Length: 211
Image (tube, rainbow, N blue to C red):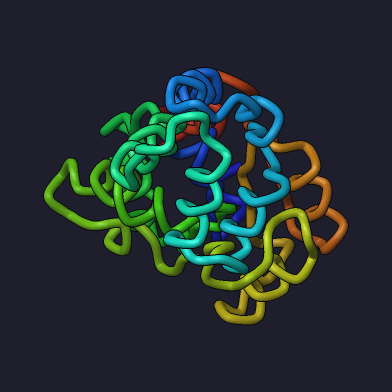
């Protein structure tokens, strides 16, 4: 599988990062946001969360919207940031090493993620710095929904990825934990690989056994 592809495109949440929706829902519930379970989805956000990930509203606007909907009137931006960040539970260092190893093998490595500026500039940034590097040190390019104003599985975000970096779909493997996102990539001629829940992309790719 690895030898058949020159480019590897990784989703972040659920593939590179470990995630737990229930923890995040519980933290938001504790702040008085009673409908957090309805608003927060593992694969595709809706409503105000979707607007944030599409870059249609700013972090400040999003905080104000959530605060207005909370039963607690004194909820701070810091509390909301911590609650949202709890969606991401970790980033095993072996996965960081695997990303580096792919690049050392001469592969191009990219990130294609539905994410938002709140998580990206806090918990995501912090976890990528575990080896003393930054997120940009692990990828040849990153396409992030809140910067591009479009979310997966919209074909436009895949088009942005392939055009910007000149990727041949048949030599590119897209790894995601969402069936809808993998299907969208496949329809555009990009090889895709669904990462099952609780699986590690290192094991799925057999990367530990590649010389």
